[in-house]
Image 1: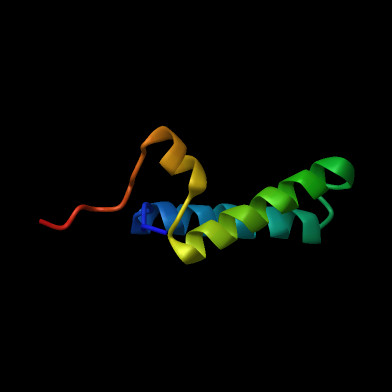
Image 2: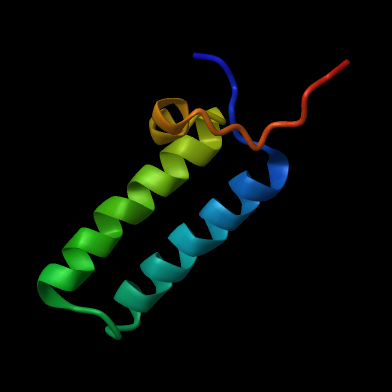
Amino acid sequence: MKTNMGGMDRIVRLIVALAVVGLYYFGIITGTVATVMLILAGIFAITSLVSFCPLYTLFGVSTCKVKD
């Protein structure tokens, strides 16, 4: 796996994942919507921790800074 996520992208994904967990914890989201959002939050957290997003490779996107 080649790194394709930059630092800011990783931080934003972690913040979104934590926000979804907080919304679920405080009962703001429930039911099927909560389940789907928690799954997406888990994916966001995992991809940010490993600095690799499979969808980025499909679309040829990279937010990682290129070293010269």
